[in-house]
Amino acid sequence: MRYAIVIEKAASNYSAYVPDLPGCVATGLTVEETETLIREAIEFHLEGLRADSLPIPQPSSQVEYVDISA
Image 1 (cartoon, one colour):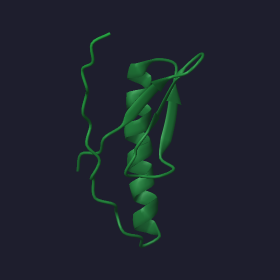
Image 2 (cartoon, helix red, strand yellow):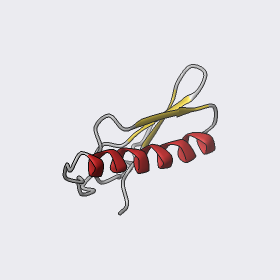
Image 3 (cartoon, one colour):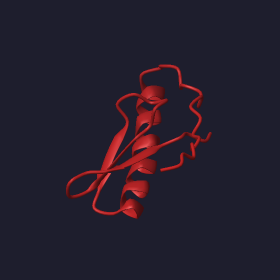
Image 4 (spheres, one colour):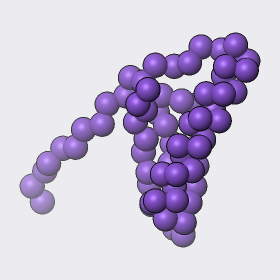
């Protein structure tokens, strides 16, 4: 499966979330650390859903960029 993630810059760190997995979040000091931690969070989140016999949400979010002239 391939889930879209969003990484945002905060005041002193980075945070990430997964639009298709509500509640699945991670924070790190760098983008690279945050990417690693959100991967682990996704795996942990899916393990929890399986353990509770809940359905695994299929990835459905799309990521696009929009160019604008400044």
